[in-house]
Length: 65
Figure 1 (tube, rainbow, N blue to C red):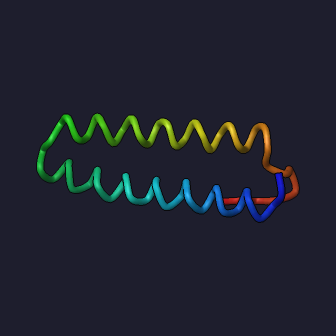
Figure 2 (figure 1 turned 180 degrees about the vertical axis):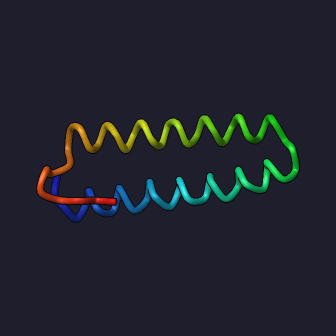
């Protein structure tokens, strides 16, 4: 996979992580456990996706995030 695509994919994942973290802060303030659990699941999945990319596709000489 070309570097440019990996950078774009990591940027997309980072934006989704940032968005979920912001929404989670709001859910914590509202004390909404269902939304908190949902967002925790999203963050876990995004983290797993990032680890998969790092293990299988990222170049060892390049830092993507």
